[in-house]
Amino acid sequence: MHEGRSDQSWGTARTKTVTWHDPISSAERGRTMSGLEHLRAVRDGVLPGAPIAALMGFSLQSVEQGDVVFTCTPDESAYNPIGMVHGGLMATLLDSACGCAVQSTLPAGSVYSSLEIKVSFLRAVHAHSGLLTVHGWVPRPGRRAAFAEADVRTPDGKLVATASSTCLVMDA
View 1 (cartoon, rainbow, N blue to C red):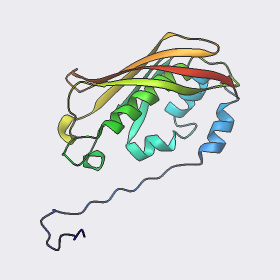
View 2 (cartoon, helix red, strand yellow; view 1 turned 45 degrees about the vertical axis):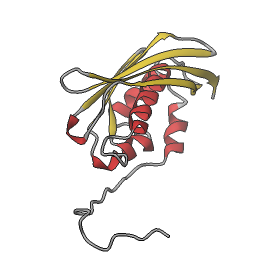
View 3 (cartoon, rainbow, N blue to C red; view 1 turned 120 degrees about the vertical axis):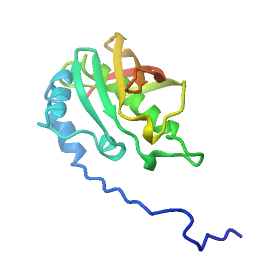
View 4 (cartoon, one colour; view 1 turned 90 degrees about the vertical axis):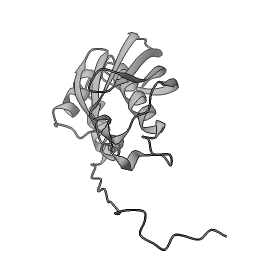
């Protein structure tokens, strides 16, 4: 039987409030735009970002055809049990960058879905790592499948994770 700790040696409890907007109405509006127009509307605050971005604290900074940049400052709420940022946050950032880079190449009425992603973790990330920059780009767009790559870097340019991805391109 597991017994919880009764003392206060765990430190101060923290809270995090997450606010998001209806993703369905935003997606429906986005389908009337090219992927590039849709992402620029999100970047500019015309349309809300994805709820996952609010949950994990990342935001779209720049978007061009086949190229996106997100930023994220991780905090302890993303830690794993051994005191580092969980690899799942890095994988989510990389998947988002790859997917949005592909989205930026799509015409109105097209959508994408990740088919596969390969992530390589190169160094640990902590809350004190600071603002992470996540860059995604498309080396090969396509009408049925598109290929994307992404990386995550610390403020001093150190590479912490990379990814390559294949996305399925479909009609909405």
